[in-house]
Image (cartoon, rainbow, N blue to C red; front, side, top):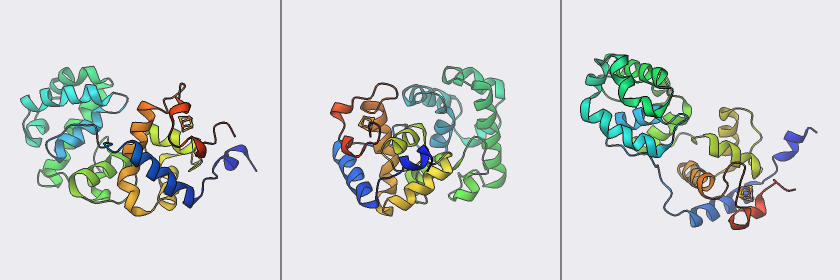
Length: 217
Ligand code: SF4
């Protein structure tokens, strides 16, 4: 058996204990992007790629102070949006995705952010991870688990998945956790990744799930 295959060895019983321990440890864990409506969250998620949520939370009010609706953004030039979102990095690509997505929403969805996974995934710069967050946060629909960099890294460490892609990891997590926990998993693992299981310098002595960690086994 290859090493990567040996690594995934937490059980369903472990997963229940892991999620309960994390929810107890991070009772406040929630989406850390600020937004007033589904379109603001969608834009925030595009901006959040390779950028901190803190920085995105500073840029979103500036952007939506100038462009109040999805139609306003659809009519903006890429250059106008670039100037505002530049601090978030990759601003040319992100500006294009934001304006193009606004145009798709205006043209195909009557200016409303769609509420299905299939439709959300047709938008520019929006994949399953962001779609899961939008569905969960804005429409109370739980269809999957949002897998980002923290979820990927920690899921491997604690033996929940050895998937190579976000899709494989999401599939593993959906089979490991009862559906009632799906909306919590991203939030608690993001909090854990920021506070304790920090990449390259984890504070293992403070970790509430250290007994499940495969890191040193
Ligand atoms: S024991 Fe350390 S490496 Fe393992 S999950 Fe906890 S903080 Fe991360």
